[in-house]
Length: 168
Image (cartoon, rainbow, N blue to C red):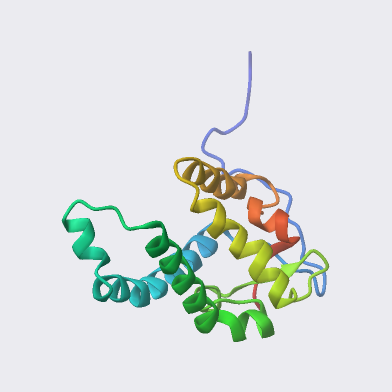
């Protein structure tokens, strides 16, 4: 066996030239960074509210928050999300985190999606599923694992007919 390949040679790849106007997929790292920033911003609002409404005290006493408190917390989080991100989502398809990470949400035709559909299909669906005890956490993990497919679209992207691309 006389193989003359250099094991130290850099790997070769067929480069794909970007066509004029073609949208490039956002990197997984940029998407992760964006969701971490958005989560941090929401926590800046929701954690102090949970402290002042007595949720922390209840948990410290070993009590589980009532269903109403959990629903109320979820609604506050949703309202805060829309107040923080609604205008940019409507205009640019971006949350604060996506804007910082230079990515944006587009529909499958490459246009900024309609806001109500985006909020209900892409965000509300994930929030509601995540509220299901035990099963919700598993479904959320499955949702995010979809990013490792070739098209880098999570399950919520498929539900909403969206994809995340690099911003100009």
